[in-house]
Length: 585
Image 1 (cartoon, one colour):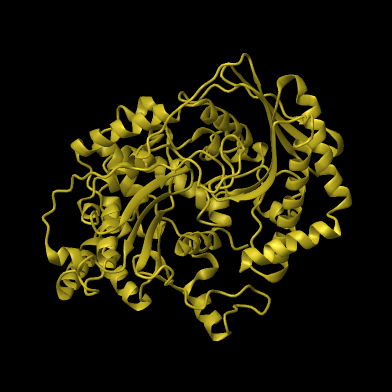
Image 2: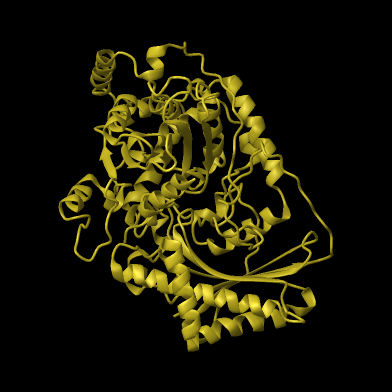
């Protein structure tokens, strides 16, 4: 559907609005040839571990969003059904409730983890949108234009929202609630709780169940940097002849996520579902991907905070554990609501305020059950917003709370702004070990090889992973750079030039793979901005027969080097420019 693309474009535009070559190398060599297979039912769920929506764990290109956790519908909320609760109820009563809530929160303590931080709207703040409208769509003469119909806003409680009317397809809309906390925000005794809370909060919602049978689709997923809940619905309820809008029902379900009840029966059901997922994802591909991520991000907390979590912890959590995580992170200032589709923006803004306006960070904080975790959660929040060069606080709230060691060849200005080093982190972790460089009891035991310095002060960070289930040699070569914002014409031109170069190189590699005796069985070169990792990843992935691995590496590197020295040919430029114009239509 076209508006699904609009959702993706809208979300990606918010990720980041404003790199000597260090290289990370990995080789995987089989001990013996054993086959492994797995079958996943369409209604089961798997944890999202792949790097991007263009590369799966085998390095193959596809059009999916990787391995995303999908849930099955169920309920536990025992709230009584009423027509008024479905569609907003009495407006005066809603205002009275909001006023009563405002009075009660005046005496509550500040939320232990709430801090002033950059807006998740980035350049799409209401002020910038208003300025763009006044200037014909441009904030600055050289900036890229905003969509003329986009609406953004921030409620009094700090909740941000974006509305994009889109009548293709007609009579449908999507609402996505993005919580800017994922597995990378978990404390040591909370590993896996973001995913479990996602299950409990949405799968157990009675208000979500009310969307069943209306032609709606609902789901949720968790990753390093966020947890997202969504509802894709018809604009009006079936058989209402266009008189009863579905948006209030959809936002009721998403608001219920923010006020989730954590009941023992629901927790046990979702715990079983999560443990089942853990068994399903334990494939050789998943293990390889974890090895790659742990090596690539060994200087930050992503290496130790995979979304699936730790089984020993998941089996022991009680309702207070889940509710503590929920009330710590599900705050109005820490979420963003997207609505895209066949809706009226003014009506949507009124419904958003009526459904979410009463929730406050102070009230959420007052319901945190495990007070012993408050100090550490507070220290983590301080380290994120006050620490030096933390990507989440400095570049975009959509990124995980990490620092990176960049490969060389990066944008030098961005590199200086966001560079972190292991030595520098050693000094700062005396306050709080944000990057998890110390050893902890639950850490996986990974034997890293030492970084090697090569010509020109460049470094290679190698790692070798062997396993009897691996059937072929694979090599994964990475360079990690800051995400470059695309906000003006020069940065847009640079991104197009990069796409042309990547397309040309991939075609050349594919041609080499079709020879009579190719050295590799698969090869792909790409560069992708990864919001889940808070960086851009340039990668060369290949597989080959173990006895031909040297030939495969030499052939692939030679093609990359030729393109770097000689560039693309005029015929390649014409072909790829035409393809870019076709994509833009």
